[in-house]
Image (cartoon, rainbow, N blue to C red):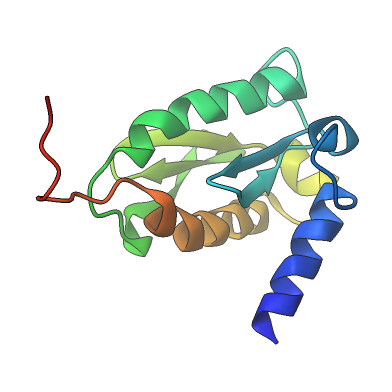
Length: 137
């Protein structure tokens, strides 16, 4: 039953099932390892939504290489007077602006909690897991 709701949620977020053009149909999607993380609806301090998504994706690369990520590694910190910052261990991932909350009909803090909750679920499941049986080099 849970799988059915999960599939339905992904389909609704992506606006339908399809491989070609899914990003064009649902701009602002941030996903990793085939797992939906968040949908960016505002540009924040970036020149465009696409630029903001690109920056988030760039920040995700080193975060995903952290060994043994845990749910508690994702935290929300106040940043300035009106926004929140989502951190993964000591690494900055995304600022949550009042516009992000308004775009989704929630407060800035509530939007930060929504994104952090999803990150806490997905990141530990898709990040690098050390395997002593694989040798580098």
